[in-house]
Amino acid sequence: MNGLLIDYEWCTGCHTCEIACQQEHGFAPEKLLEKGRIGISPYEIGPHDLGDGAYQYEFLPVPTALCDLCADRVAKGKEPTCVKHCQAGCMHYGSVEELSKKMTSKKMALFV
Image (cartoon, rainbow, N blue to C red; front, side):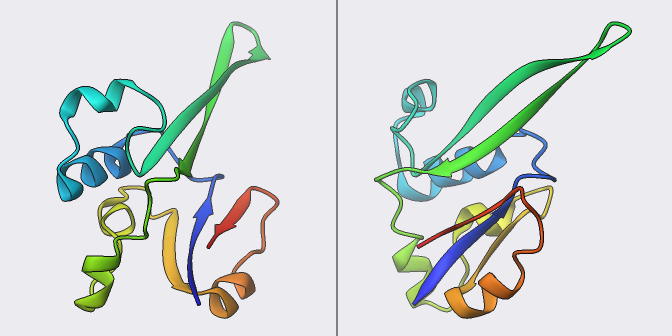
């Protein structure tokens, strides 16, 4: 069984995963404005007040019910489009057994 591992420590909130999913699957562009209408939706948490006028956001890309882990791409030997296009390199695809070994941070989630 394969899954998607996301390391939230490194997600920058660039939304590339969301755009790649929208284009790969032909979802209407206006669906990007509706959470859960694309195969993956990055959620913005914050801002967190760090003091001295500094603030920080966290970003949590979450696969939705529409995500099939790019079954068509995977059947052709490719990785899911969100993984391929993730600019931060924080998304990984593979067997659940292998991905679970990579779970070394508290800010990681494995989706199957």
